[in-house]
Structures are given as C-alpha cells and as structure tokens.
Length: 87
Image 1 (cartoon, rainbow, N blue to C red):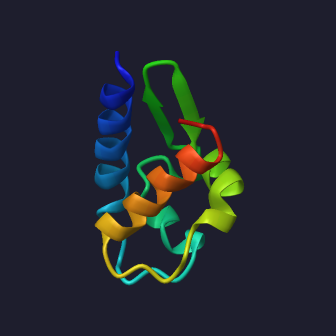
Image 2: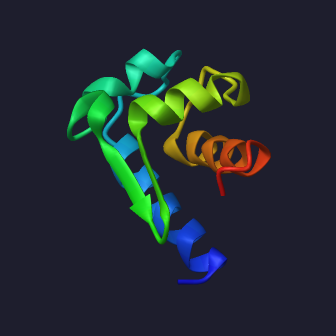
Image 3: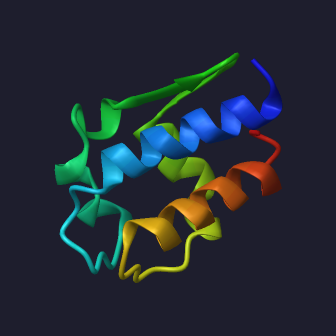
C-alpha cells in the first residue's frame, strides 16, 4: 500500500465516521456520538492504526473548532497527522 493509498483510505474512514456528526461541531466531544464504537473506534490503513481517543489526544492542538462540515474537519485531521509525524 503506497503512502497515497494510506492517506486516501484514512480520509475515507474519517469522512465515513464523522459524517454522522451534528454539524457544526464545537469540540471533540461533539464527534463521539457519530463514531460507531465511540472513542474506541479504530482507524487503520497500511501499517497505521489508532483509535479515535488516541487521535484526539495527539491532534487536539491541530484542530480549529468549530467545524461547519465534515470536509474541513477531515482536512485538519489529515494535516495534523502529517504535522505530528503520524502519516
């Protein structure tokens, strides 16, 4: 799996998981009800794997709440993963 494949797979998983949130969202806690397994929801692609809780802990400072739509949220999550060396 190439780096581009990993990014595309994670982006798709985030969009799927967060699209059910009641936007606008003003905090990470607003996203929890949308997650299939709550904070334990796992995101995996290639050799990368982490839970929603791990993601929130590592990317808290990378997010700029509130978010009005899933695309802007996922864009910041993806950028946060890159900035923190997780992707």
